[in-house]
View 1: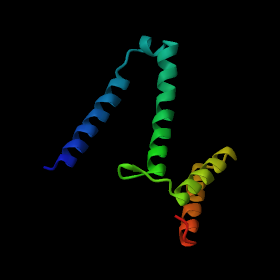
View 2: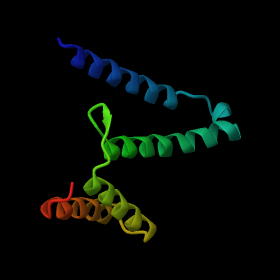
View 3: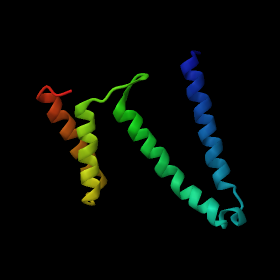
Length: 105
């Protein structure tokens, strides 16, 4: 088994353990306002970090690709206009694809 598959399996096990831990937390812990606020904000922070990494990096280097950045900008505009999630994804993909078709990026 390669190192990559070991990392994938360890990460999957860690994710499962974290999910299981979240389901078994006593109610009195979740009643704490600070814990509740933390639990509400962590997914947002993780999603923002994932979006930043995927849109501004290539491999292990920073790559400010204009087509990807324009796609992210289109997604942000669609989100600000309260578009459905599918429309947000299509707007981002269509913007990036159109710019790539015109040779940008």
